Image 1: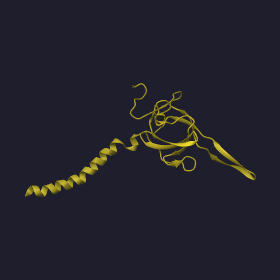
Image 2: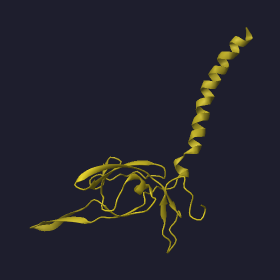
Image 3: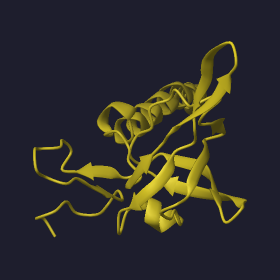
Image 4: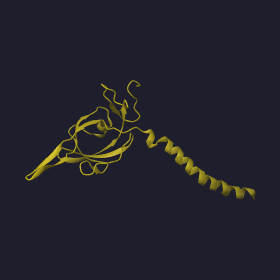
Length: 154
């Protein structure tokens, strides 16, 4: 008779303690504070579009960024980005009208829409990490996919 009263108590204890323990364990493995800012491994430029007005200053707005360079072995190259691609959208946000305000971290999956060959091309990039993390003078940083060794540790 005693064991019947203990089983429900143990079950209740497991239901109360187990979810909190699992959440704490999962949070420790992938907390945002432990991940560095993300990168895609591209160099882009943008320009300003200007519309003249007869009785006032011109109306100006930023144009969409155009990729000038895609680093070899970068997350952007793996996703199919190419020099000359015009980036229209990032994670559902139009880059001119409504740019994203979120800070993306290494390991985040980001949806891009680029303009290429007179059409929109959707691309998915899993952001990498910068190697080295800071940019010392005269050193070119490389955007590496997560899980790849840093330079000098191959």
